[in-house]
Image 1 (tube, rainbow, N blue to C red):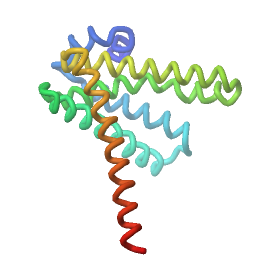
Image 2 (cartoon, rainbow, N blue to C red):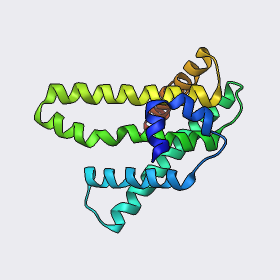
Image 3 (cartoon, one colour):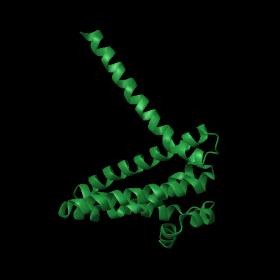
Length: 172
């Protein structure tokens, strides 16, 4: 857990020092804590919930890492999929504060909403620092890593709407 503590206070330095050696047992421990927190936040404590939240958490983490790494490779950077999966698990630890902030938000809506927004900005800052250090890329490449998937999702949504509209016209 010392590595997590060090990551939270100096992510760039820790990534530089430990990117070549990954402690996967610690990573699995962080994922397990994340799963337990999401179980407490959304459902009841049982084996089925643990498995369901585990599958969702791991899927989200891996899909996010694949999208980030594919975008980085599209921009001409070296693929770092395992490193991204590993360090996203650490960055995700920032979101452990969200259940507490949801409680604050239900009591003091404006303050809780502001704190939740700030927490998400901090999470994005950790993601930015992590990706910048792992890929060692320029500012424009970093912007591309964030913007290209967003543009792709918008184009996918437009394509699906057009396709659904065309299918509705064919059926009638």
